[in-house]
Image (cartoon, rainbow, N blue to C red):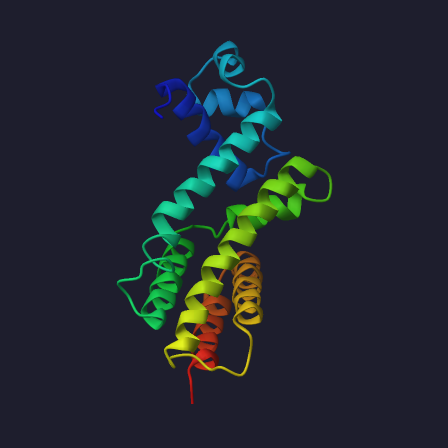
Length: 195
């Protein structure tokens, strides 16, 4: 389903601002100024800032699934090791391109909003579960094919991978160095490898 150019501009501007400044620190005036869309046009498309925020989140999830998860973790033409390696390569490339590091848009929003807003918490929870399930499926296939170690459950390994990734990205943002993500990724790939 296609969306109008003005609605697209609003969503893209809001995505960038929410990632750079945070949801609560971004005003509707910031969004109209960044998008070049009038406030009345913004309200034509969205009844509230929360509605815009949730739509922005849904769009970011759709982009992440199509641009990151589908071609990597869900790409059955690659071996499980190749899938996970390519996933990590894309994640690291994305965070390396941010100057200064801004962190994970999903993790940032979860930290900011999940304690105070159930609509954001539920949407983010559903996304993180789907992300973890994609990792688990890849890991399970790696265990079954003998590429990955089999002495831990795939679900536990998937939780560890996602938890490490989100934590490492917080450290990248805090320390302003890629080292926590780079070295942690390398260590996880070594730990997963079957003996």
